[in-house]
Image (cartoon, rainbow, N blue to C red; front, side, top):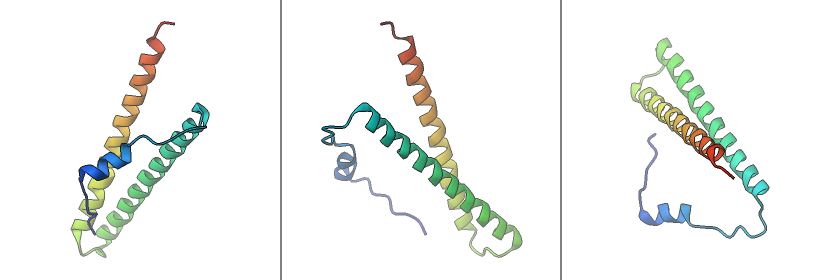
Length: 102
C-alpha cells in the first residue's frame, strides 16, 4: 500500500555516480534524457488516472478505505509539483545559456 522509502547514503550516491559513457555523443545523451522525460510524464499521467479511478469509486461508495485515495492524491500532487519545478529549472537554464555571449 505505502511504498518504502530508503534514504541510505550508499543508495543515493550509487544513483549519481559517474558512469563510463565512452563512445556516447551529445545526441545519444539527449535521446536518453528525452526518453527519461517521456517516461516520467507517462508515469505522472498514470498516477493521475489512478486518482481519478479512486475518486470515482469513492463517489459511488465502492471505496471503503479513504486513505488510499488520499495517498494516491498526494503522490500525484507531489509528482506534478516536481514536474513543474523541473520545467522551471530547465527553462531557467535555457534562458541563461541564451544570454551567454560568444
